[in-house]
Length: 557
Ligand SMILES: [Zn+2]
Ligand SMILES: [Zn+2]
Ligand SMILES: [Zn+2]
Image (cartoon, rainbow, N blue to C red; front, side, top):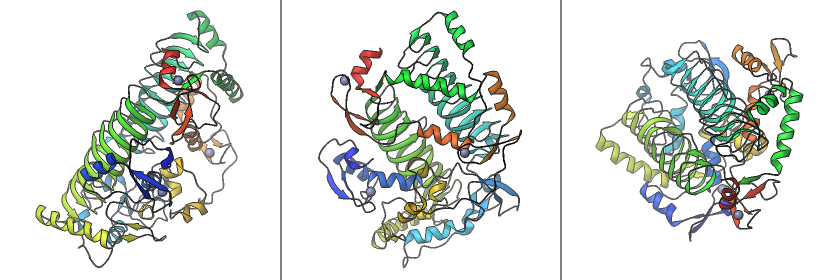
């Protein structure tokens, strides 16, 4: 979102982004938040901050590498050539090593973040970002907790018997879905909440057995439907008898990729003529952004549920999250979070962190689960009052942190492009253990290598691999050429529902689902019915018929 596209509420102070040199505005509400968080106003614009922050999550690209503790081969998000030390996740979470043994004093003759960078080069990272004690037979999942019999599922809390899911709260027996909560036996669907058997559907809630549908609520047995509420037995939005519906489904043979594509095309044709709401979401008050539900006073945000008083927040899966700015992933009891990535589960008053499960008053730290009052720390579990992994008393800590904050302003870290990171800026992307193209940033803002490097991000060239031609056991992706295999449960699923075997690899399928969403941007458009100006993530040149909220309600309710 550039500033011209964000939602302004009043007079603000114009600033020039230190990174992209575009102007952005800090509004009175924003200043009030920064004051509450005791942080200076940012020097980067919201969009540049978002990209920098998302570079702090690498969750999806897995490698085989050695565990630097046990010597075992492990699956990891850290490339074997990465300069970081990596411990198998269960070892990382154990008492077999002590993060405080890496303690060091603060050197006031050098930038503080330089010293934090050096700490990160010595303290081990976990191979995977799971809570290993909660994972059962789910070795190839990451950013995951409480999973049983899951395969290649990411950013998932609570799952059983799933494969190829991305960003999930509680799902069962589902395959190939993204951004789904509390759902069961779904396939090929995106942004689904409380559904049972949603196939190839988007933005549906409380639905049973819906196929190729969009924006349905409380519906069952619908196919190719859009904008319905509390309906059953509908085909292309037309009411049919139960028998007619059953006959239609029985005769619909989607067992080949060609048939599936042809039917999807029919659905797309039909939906072209149907209006879309300016915004995806339900039960909101005073919300601007997209894919937001059950929220209040949320602006310039994307893909979140149960939020209150938020701005520039993204991907807070199930909430609640309250009083946060610039916070990406994942919420679940979080408040007063600012410039944090991949943090939550009882997190409070945290700034400039990545990967923090449960914590309070943590700043400039990575992976300090269950800790409070940490500044520039890594890998400390359930600690209090540490700086650069060194233990202090409460009084020593408080005095030293004040001194460091001032020092960070007087002598900020400079990255290789000369950009400065005084106290109040998120950690530089160049310190992230993941390169741009390994991170979430790349999924939402894809760039070529040259561009990413010119913008100060790190990059990893793809490993040279020879892919085999497809055989009975091993398939070859029709898009990227990568080999992939089918697992038993998915074969059974395809057979049960007469679905073809996918022609693309899991990663390409995942990326296609993300690409099917409206972008993380707000545009000005006019309502196709009443011509009122609206804020929407449908770019003005898109072909959809977009209605304002009230025209949409009149049409749909
Ligand atoms: Zn900028
Ligand atoms: Zn592929
Ligand atoms: Zn209207």
